[in-house]
Length: 353
Image (cartoon, rainbow, N blue to C red):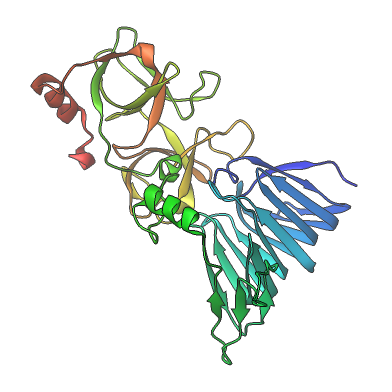
């Protein structure tokens, strides 16, 4: 058994280090390929993977893809704010690190709670908690909850006689349905309660503030022990989105310095365009333990390219990117006045005006 190996792989889960155990490992530093064989076990947050073999594919220091093989290989994850794990198995499991998608290939089955989906291929979008089933289906049944006078199972995946899967989900109780309507606004509404964790650009209510004498450092997380991602001068304006426990989440016009893997932003400067959804930004130009994930940008976001280091680019993200700073470094205003608004507008980068 080789020692546990730390890598960075898959959303709240994939920002944590992954521990991989196997009987043997083969490393090819030229191609960036790593192969783990024999009783492979992966643990990362709520994610668990069991396989006979695991291949990791790197581009520079960025993990791009992982392929697990087994008879079957098994994947388990607890989605955010869900009561049950998603448990999937197939001969081959492909993990797309960039887009946060898991694809189950060959005799694929996924179960969550009492609902089961089967097909030749199942694509599981972890970021959106959605699935697509492809290929010929097989009939399966969830664990029965028999009622008096009924021999029917509460949920069945049925075969339609074609290659298109048809899934019958178990009905929810009235209490569960009422709770869903109350929390989302409608029974079919998409749960977006975790959207702020991705640091995607969004419009939010704010309080106007100025940075106090002595300036302020900015952070990607609420800890002064974490790497700083920029600094502001005294008198710089800030939009305070929220405050708690001595920390404030703010938007600023300038001063943020973060790193993005070079292939996901076009151009050498001064302006670049992000290509790819949920592209992670880091405090340092690596995926090592000292490099903290500080947020994400979506496809098409405009950034300023400040520096190039090997395969990485230092950028200034768009206005609206959330950063953290100690609340004591801010002086809040009662209202958004003309002086503050003028200062904010004058400090905006040219590409954000």
